[in-house]
Amino acid sequence: MAADGLISVKSQYQPQETLARLEATISERGLTVFARVDHAAGAAQVGLSLRPTVLVIFGNPKAGTPLMQSVQTAGIDLPLRVLVWQDADGSTWLSYYDVAWIAGHHGAGAEAKAAVARMSTALQAIASQAAEGWPPTK
Image (cartoon, rainbow, N blue to C red; front, side):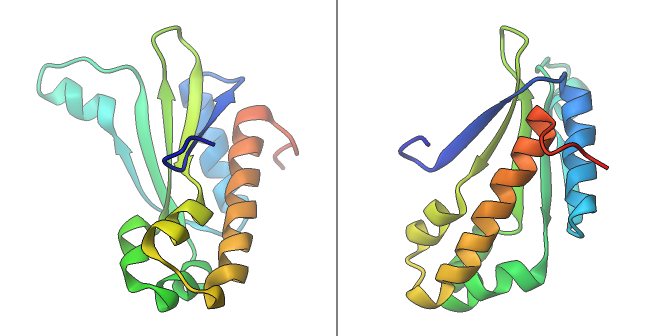
């Protein structure tokens, strides 16, 4: 994990397949995809180029609310977000902020510890499943 809380997981798939796997994994876990922001498409609209870069915003209020009850400013970092992007060498990555880092950054109290642990475990599993195919998607 980087010092600033950013975690990046290399995907064995191309960006579009990684994105599809990510969204399928999120749905399989009963979470809601609230938005998809296609930064490359936005760049193209203004005549600029950008390698594939898509932000997926997702979550479950039941999971995130305990963190916000502990420290309401955590809401600026919730719902959870995963960025699917392609680097200059053609590798695909999933990047996200570690939930424990988010909680610490906002000064969450001990009452949020269990929720943070559940969210961290789920986010790590989602990224791994989308990037590496393990465990396999249904």
